[in-house]
Image (tube, rainbow, N blue to C red; front, side, top):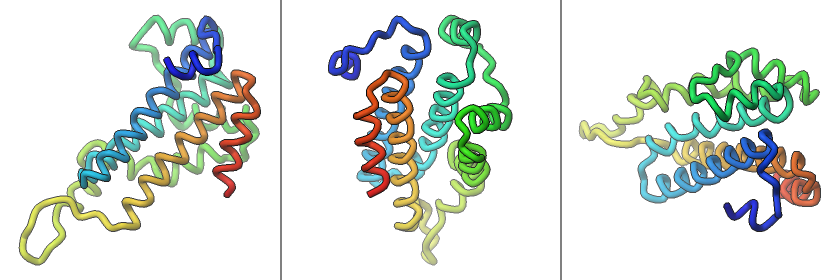
Length: 181
């Protein structure tokens, strides 16, 4: 893994092991979203934003809330039951003292992300765009930009969380500067 090789991170600790895997997954999904948009496969790009968001939510919970026993179960049992998303976000916000940040992001976007990911009404209605009866992707530039920004923001948030958790605070600060500029 490039992250480990470049930084000398010890993946022996369960939490760091999971955070590194989650970060790598989000990097890959982020690149896929970008590639899908470049190839005008907008529906698939929109659908992929939900697993990116879910990975961020799980990462924040794993980092700040999961017990050692839960971490062990998570890496040993593919049927591990995460807390319900609402409860997970409440606990994450409380633990991080984020004043409802994660709950707000979830409440503002989760239903839409699910609609795109599960071929719901938002995904369906964007199949029809022209008066000529054409069926195909019909996404506005603003919507496409929103998905690209969302994917990048989620990636940056997870990278900050990862670098802070592995005591690479300078790298976390550099990413925070990117977000603020």
